[in-house]
Image (cartoon, rainbow, N blue to C red; front, top):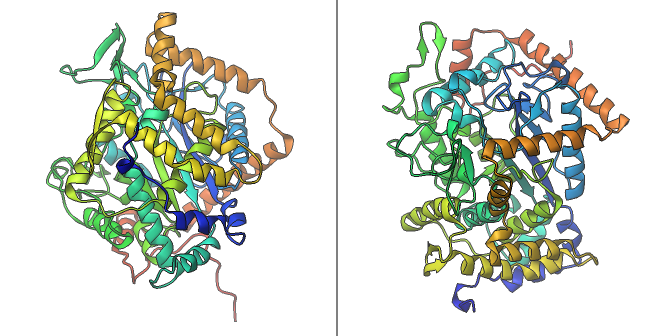
Amino acid sequence: MIDPSLSYAIPRGWLRALSDPAVRPLLAESLVGLEKEALRVSPEGRVAATPHPYGLGSALTHPSITTDFSEALVELVTPALARPHAVLDFLRDLHLFVYQHIGDERLWAASMPCVLGGGAEIPLARYGSSNAAQMKTVYRRGLGNRYGRVMQIIAGVHFNFSLPEAIWPLLQAREEAGGDGPGAFRDDRYMGMVRNLQRLGWMVPYLFGASPAVCKSFVKDPGTDLHSFDSKTYYYPYATSLRMGDIGYQNRQEEGTGLKANYDSLDAYTRSLTWAIQTPCPHYEPIGTKVNGRWEQLNDHVLQIENEYYSTVRPKQLTEWMEYPTLALRRRGIRYVELRSVDVNLFEPLGVDLEQLRFLTLFMLYCLLIPSPVIRPQERRWIDANEVLAAHRGREPGLMLQRSGGAIALRDWGAGVLDAMQPLAELLDQDGGDDYRAALRAQQHKMAEPEATPSARILAEMRANGEGFAEFARRLTERHRDGLCEQRLDPVRAEHFRGLALESHAQQAQIEASDDCDFDTFLARYFAQTETEPVALRSPFARSEEPA
């Protein structure tokens, strides 16, 4: 029996507001988008040393096919769409198009890489000869110098969610909320959503974690307390997501830097990141910036740029040419929220499935609706600890987490939260389907039966087949490749992707031709921008003024 005092019930006023005939159709227009990373590897599973294929377009300017840290780490980006199945269809087509251009290479099926020979084998992403391209590569060189290159090629799935802009004035009116207008109301609710996604963020690795084991080649610490699964594999018996544990994705900037993003409000959040970008850090000074003529990092500050802060969730706004992301947020508010803690699901050819997208939509909306007080220092420590506990020991019987109401069993807390989502799932299924309730039931089953989680299934299959993690991941990589290569890409979509690739190369050339200063001046102008002063770098895509 779940203690009623631990309930996370959605306020009835919100459910009534969303059920209103004027609001309900808008709710169905909520947008979902995905950013899915995948490591290009050789048939033997080693990181590909080849350049990003020309036929895929320019990684600098292509809207849907780019690279992350490494030239070998492909990032596939879908548009934001109102139908989750349309998002998956687009992601599938991106996979089909990529496989047409990578020869005998594969897209690695797992978040965690394997068969690593050290950071020297991992090529930094390259974006061309322009100042903007050089900035992206120098930033990545700085990441490698600060944290090591091996850590930077962990792959994940980023889930982006937003409500339609037209819904916010209606919700504000029904809430009788004050403030400066719908924009301020929207930003306040989204920041509350971000805080709740942190409070309940441990649920994501528990339900969807798919990295309970790693290759021993990934772990360089001889004193690790990871267990040996076999001669080539480390694991924890009850792990869910080592990617989200303290050997993977978790932030390192807080160790000795004093950085902790403040999520009390959008203003507090942007100011905390701005401080980090502008504040020198003794820890990174020994690396240097420009050493023997080569830039080793963009600066020696706590953060080189905002993207270096690896939080599990971020408020986002689309940026203009070379605009600080924090300034975009301050000027135009929050456009969408990005959940970054989702592992690549090895069992799925696309790394994610439709049921998962529906549940994450439900989860994000739920976190928007429930109360969200500011996070106090003690709760911040609990949030961080809960995340690592769920990642390392999430399926452990009787595992306790900490929250403001006191210690509670992970499975009891999770069951209470999932039960509280039921009215919202019913609301989303109001048009006669059972999609969201079915997705919710699947997660309730995992909460009650830990062996049904992806992490447990991975370890069980490895044991049954006598496989280490590398062998298991390679087998699924081959299975997914074979299945995808048997599918035919729709000719219209194929032509669309070819057109995007050609256009992206033209845009890269346009950027390169427009450079009017050296790289040192370019960086100085970039970092000189303020909220009141836009960046003093002319956009290569700006229209020239018509002659008089």
